[in-house]
Image (cartoon, rainbow, N blue to C red; front, top):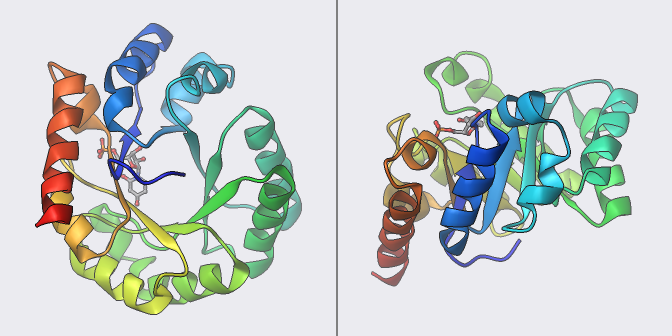
Amino acid sequence: MEKKSCLILALDVSDREEALKIAEDVSEFVDAIKVGYPLILATGLGIIRELAEFAPIIADFKVADIPNTNRLICEHVFEAGTDAVIVQGFTGRDSLDACIEIASEYGKDVFVVSEMSHPGGAEFLQPVGEAIARMAAEAGAFGLVAPATRPERVTAIRKIIGDKLTIISPGVGAQGGKASDVIAAGADWVIVGRAIYKAESPREAARKIAAEIEAKLKG
Ligand code: 3DU
């Protein structure tokens, strides 16, 4: 995934036409589009190839099963035309290895959730987040998903993984995180959903966030 704007759109709308229109409108300002259950369950896997016209696609299925099931899921995800998949790390090394094995067969990337951005993410996942980050680095994942709502956690995880892995960070906008803070904390990309797709002008909202990130990186 090429780093230009350092912004990823989380496209959690449920309507095909709306999804394609937003993707086209914001494509100039995003490095990738993240799709997940809301859009795929509503419109089908076929939308991935349509959206891929505008940007690389990250499938956020937070894959969290035994190795064999993970392998089967990841095969479908990559066959559908995605560039990367997001998987959970708490299922352990063998489950993660299965995803990475399939990803490398397809020449694609795996992002591992180390901890989540919502308040409940601090209950069970946060205490093991750093161990998951270490495991993901050892397993050869491409990147981690770390919370923009807690920039200090992004910094802590960056310290553990160094430059070995990338960090993508959701929680900017609707969940309260600020793009420039998260980039300063050590994230490579911020992930933004509602603050873009629910805006009166998604294009303008994406442009503004990309400009904020650019200013931070320059300053
Ligand atoms: O809050 P937003 O509307 O900007 O969307 C954030 C997206 O990132 C959304 O798709 C959500 O499922 C995903 N995500 C998190 O918000 C937090 C995580 O820890 C992992 C993924």
